[in-house]
Length: 475
Ligand code: NAD
Image 1: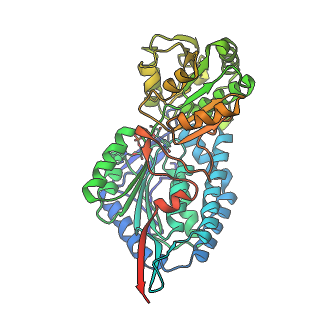
Image 2: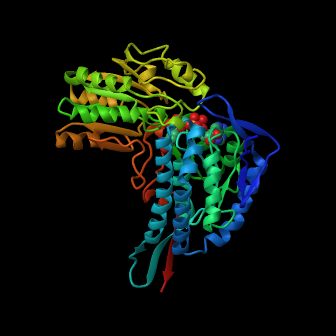
Image 3: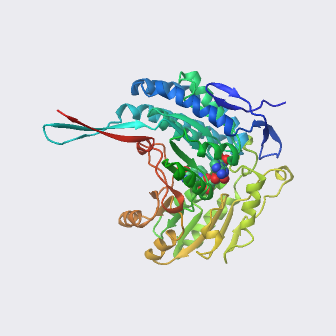
């Protein structure tokens, strides 16, 4: 019998009356039962957070910094085990899961350092008044996160929230509960008081909805789909609670004729194969100048054909998608190629050893109608929708032509054009001659349009998890 995964509340495992199975996407078999938390567990977690936060808010930034640094060291110590759990739960190749463990520790360290130099302002009001601002925590904050980068998503919101003096309650995705619980345990081992980092496992409709609606939760951060993000925002608005919404994307890689095509092809492939394309910032649209389309597409096709596919534990280039449901969803996009031509992939890969897993081949469809579903909707699989352009204005219009706005990249050797497009492209992050899926611990990250609002990562997350208090003293 595999070890069950329970919620972690006030420093203890908390079992629920009911469980569900954590399914291994590489085999379709259960990795073990998971406690199906709901309103009761959320209530316990919020109460424990309220209690613990009263003392936590009185600690110095230096004390919190030291504890976060100790936590990061424990994540490094257990990185291999965390990576194994992450790879099994998500299906992602071990190398990518190892990177995720490293980045999770980086977030803890980054906010450990940042909190020491996070200041309010003094505001000149003349000799008789002393006016200044304080950045104060909300109290108990809730995070509902997706399954694609469980450790990174956990760590990026919890590190900033805890560094600024909040207590947290995290609802990990149903599919990937184990590393969230493991990270919360390590927080306790590092000396962070019980109740500051709580995890409630369970489904979105039960644990997630209960957390979103709980009157004790003073701030919500959400990473997931635009549809659920909108539900969260409505629930938060009912209680007048601020939210950070990190939602989906349909990010464009715009390649001009003067670009370094080898580097562009490399990045285009990596930008959609990482985590099997299940990355909010996947470069899932390719917008290529007509003069170089054949050369670039050939380079992408060659690389796609050479990709190794298999279970994450065997560390291939491409693992399975997170679930059979996700595989069917990706497959469904192949029914309508939006007028495009399928150049490679388009189906499940061959091979008996892959038959029971949720695999999908790297896929490139060129010449798609920019208004078609394949060009407009997030596939969340290893699928590129590609289209050609002739003029710069046309490239910008195509790149900006979806409701999303998470990332964009420009490939050109003309530096002026790079900057011009960085300004013209409607996205939360723009890369010139590189493409950073996710984009780094220290770089503010978030969406325009239906990709969400608010920012995590970098110093901006410290603002997101605090509220300003202005103090004016008559001297
Ligand atoms: P999802 O919206 O289905 O689920 C996300 C989380 O919300 C899960 O924990 C889920 O259990 C919970 N949830 C579901 N219904 C809920 C409800 N009614 N109330 C409260 N919580 C609920 O998304 P997903 O399929 O897990 O993740 C994929 C999506 O996440 C993609 O659209 C992807 O682009 C997006 N994403 C965005 C970012 C970013 O930073 N912008 C990062 C990763 C993933």
